[in-house]
Structure formats: structure tokens, C-alpha cells
Image (cartoon, rainbow, N blue to C red; front, side, top):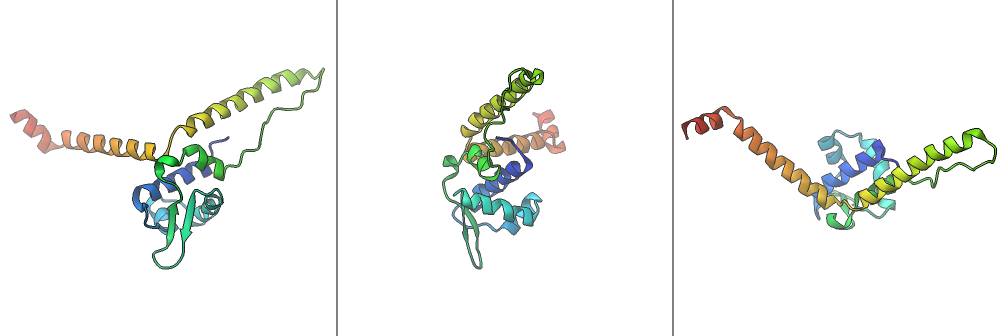
Length: 159
């Protein structure tokens, strides 16, 4: 598994649907505008996400996309894997007597192992987890802005 721009955009787009869509379809144009992503690129991604059974489309006025599964049942690994198809192991064929064979094996083994660990990690994170983290960050940011505003500082001095 490689974490590519395609995977990051897919996660961002599905997070947008989970956050604002719910059961109501959200259009690709809306996602494109809110997240500043190319509409044509989103169309390609959503074709793959639809084939991966992560989203379904609703046609017509008020149409768009909804999640097939609840946000807590959709993992980041599923999203990334649906748009970044794994190419299998990248381990080279070993040829005895080749001096570069061992170096190539170690380097490739390291990256395969890292990719496997990354996939295992992303399997444990759901869209719901990201939504909760985003909401916590937004609350902290609001408190920080409030605490550093001139009125707030003046109120703290009086108290």
C-alpha cells in the first residue's frame, strides 16, 4: 500500500460526505468547492470508490453521493485501497551470485514491511474516528481564539 495524493483526496472527500452528507446525497461539485479539489479528478476517484462499494450515487436534482456504510464501519485502509490498487509484493526475484541481490532484497523488504504496518494502522482508523478528532481540534481552536481575543484578555485581567 502506498499513501498517494489519490488516497488522501479520497479520504478527504469521504470525510466531507460523512461530515455534511449523512443520508443526504452530496454532489461532487460541492465537495470540489469546499475542499478545493478538481471536479474531474473527483469523478475518477468516485468511480473507483463506487466500484469499491464505499459510496453509492443518486441521480437527478439533489443527487450526489452517500456512504454505503456508516462512518464507524468505513476504514481509511478501505478507502486508500479502493483508489490505490495494491500491486502485490515488490520483492525482487533472487538470483544467486548477484552482489546487488542482497542489498535490493533488504531495501525492498523494508518498504514492503513498512507498507504492511501502515495498512494495519489505517485498518484501525475509521471515518468516524477522524470526524471526532476534527471536532476536538475545532473546539480547541475556538477556545484558543476566544482565550487570546482582546476582550477575553481584558476579562481575565479584571477577574
